[in-house]
Image (tube, rainbow, N blue to C red; front, side, top):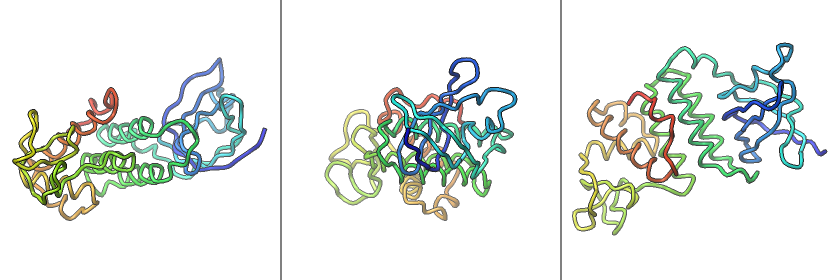
Amino acid sequence: MSLYRDEAVVLRTHKLGEADRIITLLTRHHGKVRAVARGVRKTTSRWGSRLEPCTHVDLQLAEGRTLDVITQADTLTSFASLGGDYDRFTAATAMLETADRLVAEDKEPATQQFLLLVGGLRAIVSRHRPPGPLLDSYLLRSLSVAGYAPSFDACARCGVAGPHGWFSPAAGGILCETCRIPGAAVVGFGAVGVLGALLAGEWPVVDTASPKELREASGLVSAFVAWHVDRGLRSLAYVER
């Protein structure tokens, strides 16, 4: 079996047999990979804690017929402190699920998604900002990288510059009065500005937004995610919005 190295974030794990686990990883250079960690559930295992969800690791893997095999794992960044903060833990869990759902398991490079996830987790752990806006920014950016970029500065249908007062996930963003469709939500201009700032990473705009604008923007982000991600994200139900 040929060996390769990569850095990865552990997205989720499943038990396999009595002592093994299947580890789902988002790697920097090989996209999403499912690999077996032999003996990782044994009490004598020296590296079981390095392969828990939310851990950023450097790995050596051996290519297999159906599943690769992890032969070495070293921790690069541990996000274990998230376990003591419910709001930050649930936000991080939603990030992991988003990456898992948006990246196909075909070993095609997904470097942008990987860097977004690592950056999002580090921002959550840093505690410099509330987890809600950090999660919303990550969701919008990861969907954009996946090909579902929303439009917040011009009408998503005709391209007329905004701001505009209607929003439709199905249409791909804000809509002008001429293009608005049935079911489009009325949205305040302040919330539209927050949405654009979350997508662009303009944090001074987000930091000065009112709680009402942040709540309105967050609700629209959730609606946009639910429309574009099949079956929605289960973890969002546990995130405090």
